[in-house]
Figure 1: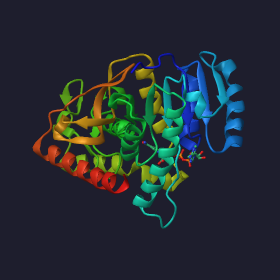
Figure 2: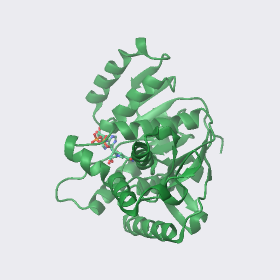
Figure 3: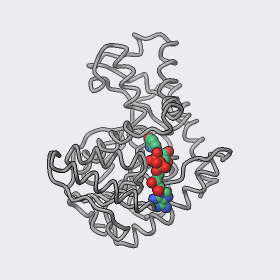
Figure 4: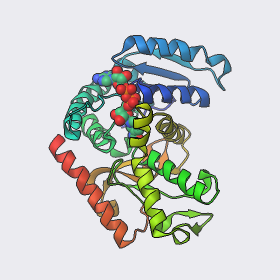
Length: 309
Ligand code: NAD
């Protein structure tokens, strides 16, 4: 299947995450055309006006407008941040079922347009919804990318960087597995300039960092209702890697088919990102303990996946 090239982006879902992504796109001048789709037409129209008033000071001009799924026809990338939020008293599985239904209708409408590009999914539970997008779209697996553990890994690099007074960009390390409670840091390969960090931290401190990364979203949501800037930057990083054919390694949600000994599930793993999507999953050499944690994380996801689809 021929892939649509160019750099037109359709953003589906213009809530806190989607609108932060649109703002970051404009600031980084990553595309020529941005079309925003959301049920809340009025809010999108307001945001489009607001964003357009910033173009005079953006690095490059950009066409930004409100649109519909038909606009996906010639899009290079569709980014999905749409979905229902968890309501009080609603279980996680209720939310999964609700968002799976929403995704069925969104993905089918996108595919009906003749879309032949790459999907980038951020809506939670992101690993399940990336899988669902892959299934409903019928696109090759490399063309569906979840945000996976891109944000969790950035949080990890920030915290380890603070520990050693080093910029996060110089901290090399990954959170892998579910974007959720069963995720974990791969301490065995985390390093700064090739120097392992795990041996310079106590077991207690390592556990504190892992917990702080895992629970960061709860803390932010408690403080301001939602998390959006960090994930928007993560989505932008993946967008840039795709559009500029970077071949960079990023921790994204990718479909494993034998890698790490698992299959038929989207999980956060370091992957090489190119203009064609996920070129390759990088298999870190894990300790026995890390392998066990990954297996548990995969089991957690599969249980939800099996009951939701
Ligand atoms: P939000 O409620 O602010 O925005 C959701 C948007 O989706 C709303 O504008 C709503 O109108 C729209 N929408 C709902 N159903 C739709 C449909 N059928 N078609 C089109 N638009 C529809 O939520 P948010 O804070 O922006 O979060 C969005 C999602 O991103 C959530 O699922 C959230 O959990 C997730 N998230 C993921 C990460 C990550 O790391 N992957 C981080 C933060 C948030």
